[in-house]
Image 1: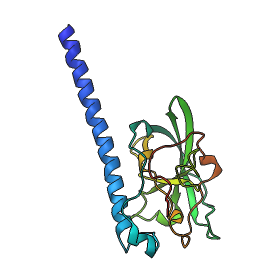
Image 2 (image 1 turned 180 degrees about the vertical axis):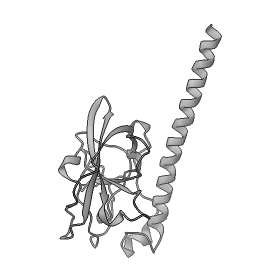
Image 3 (image 1 turned 90 degrees about the horizontal axis):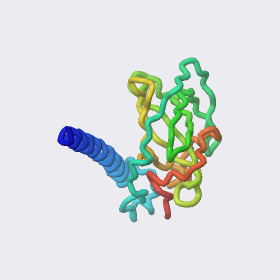
Image 4 (image 1 turned 45 degrees about the vertical axis):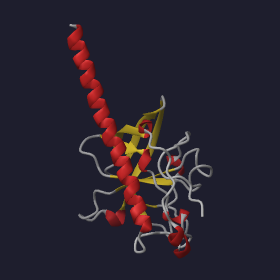
Length: 199
């Protein structure tokens, strides 16, 4: 009996470790891809001067505690609305779902959106999660951050805050960036993802 329990425990630890390793690998791959994008003259949002000096973005340490599984309340009949940006531009978005999750023992919710222009067959799988939190203006960008998601098969979605990134406005004033709605403020410091950019 004791031997069986030990085997089960070892299996559980092995599965948990494998899952944790995949999560960490995914976060590292995200960081590598983002640094590659920022290093590219064609893709980088950096100014010409900053690009010349660019080596790597500054990231919080990868923390699997900031990977949450959220339950979704879908909003299939939501109407398109104009989302505020840092300029006069007002792109059209639809509310895709409300994501409810637990983080460090507290319950939170965030709204997930779809850009009307990206509802074509080629881009219909792209979801947009803009948010602000208590780290903004200190260790992370003052205007909030974004996470890209894909529609899940069921009613749950994994949100990995280690993959939170800054809008292009954090690096270059020429861009027009969506401002996270007030409903998407988290009353907690999200110490994961990309840190504030220091020129």
